[in-house]
Image 1: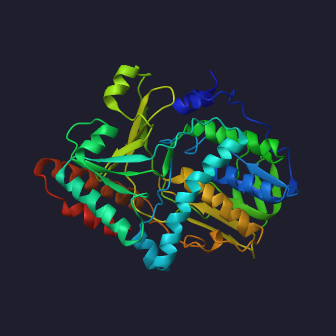
Image 2 (image 1 turned 135 degrees about the vertical axis):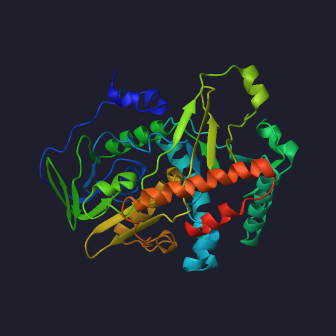
Image 3 (image 1 turned 180 degrees about the vertical axis):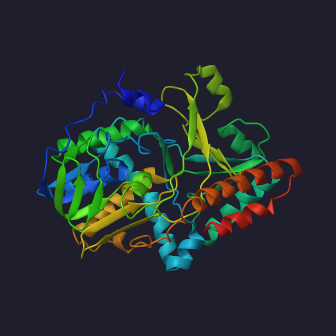
Length: 409
């Protein structure tokens, strides 16, 4: 069996053969070189090519397009942004924070529009997200989240509080006392989306070189074992693989997420479970869980723990170096916004996207190992313990709030 099909359920259920395309043949000159064939790199190439068909663009991917987190994730194309409204407001002011979150909501529909226009069959179902509250502390956080959303001017059509009956009607689970619902999310098959985008940019004339590892990024240069790509702009779109590049070991803290899927379930089972509109789902515990009803009727779910960091996108015209990343598990839609923003920055277009607060933001570098590993895992342990304490006592755990503040919430 093709080894790429064994990476995940998602990779094993794409229609194309998952054979890598041709590698870089040698030294070459282009206008834009993009390191990374995940969502960030693919969307950047797509929007650049659409805006200027004459641009010479090369995407360099170590394995195959969609190999990493872009092809194997929870399958949420959501408006979630990995920094709170409060954090964005502290960074750049309240109007900028609101603009950032409104841009994310619009991005979900943008992805849906491209999927339709380009004929990408990624099982797109925009059913929103239901987050259950299954204890008194969780219900308190649900109410606080809605109140906080209202304070920033977002209404019922963005996020609403659910009664126990409303929440259970969407997803039947034990001990449901309420929840929240937002329409700003679509369930997708992520590997189908990544592979569909790869095929689309190839059809548009973008050079996608697979089996081509980028070993270093320099001003106007992307170096690989097969040769050097010289370009006016070199974009780093390597996300979790960034620490493997020289000088960037502490730029990103890679974290993993675990997910499983059942066999296809009969309709009678789904009649009991719910999710009739294919809403994605989770709950208001501290350690994040997530899931979806797949197009072929599987119950797919997983969990992870991650700090509230801040994604960023930027470009230095002086060196020609650009980047995007730090999505903290919310990258499916955020990478699309990054791709559109990078295209505008490269083409020097004065748009609202290039004024958003994450543009040219720089998060501080992570601590050296083993401190990074110890800190990340200690935070996950604290959050997991807080969930256990709340389940046992029915009262909010103070340790979770303290941990959130320390981790940048």
